[in-house]
Image (cartoon, rainbow, N blue to C red; front, side, top):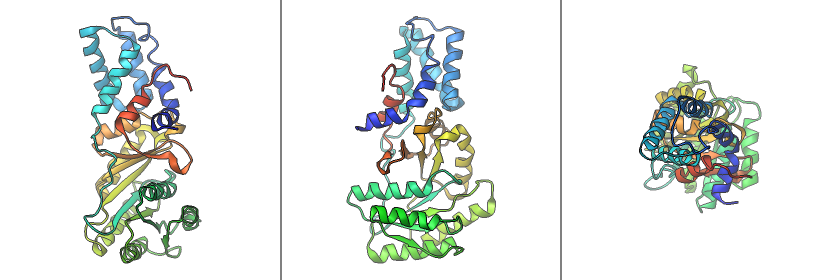
Length: 307
């Protein structure tokens, strides 16, 4: 399955949510009415594009209709164009150290799929002929270490772990040391899920990054927030608070295949100006994909296509 088809299939629920609001506009009427604009606004907000992005799209649609008229397909094209503008051309590229090991820290609240995402990210690096290792810095959740070790075995990727109850920063320090000594290209630090409202837990994240930086200047080279797409724009507050604590360099959006709120990718990117690095559109290891803005928007607004 090609990337476009993978994205289109994964975004199917969001597509349905969007185009259920285009019903009055696909009739080909050259004029916009208050009712049709209200219906479009409701559809975009319902798909969690956020108010800023929704108003931007509606403004562009109004301008286009005033100049040339239009129809539902034209609206999809206008919306896709406006959405794609919000993303940088090289959005998904991972930063890398000038030399030696690159350290990536994954952060987020409980249940977003950080551990699985860490393993899938390691697989992507592996497929690009890069060596990688996983650091099991969730030392409190029951079976967290076993979970990441299972992934390591499955993908033939080394896992550096301590005992339950160990200071996560100490595990991070040991993992960076091991990765550097082994000449590993990428170390992915899997941290425990934590509520963004708990200041002590956010300070623990800061400590992990600080210790990694002391052991290897410049580390972590990426701090990526893993967000669950099913939470929609409610994830915006999570992103704001994590960004205040650890200065995020990018977002990974998971579970897009299980929600009609896929517009949140655009809404949060638009409001916080944090790049989207990867999106998850399924359960399989290769269902985590580097974010491609053009393919994403084309798939999101592919109107009238059947599975």
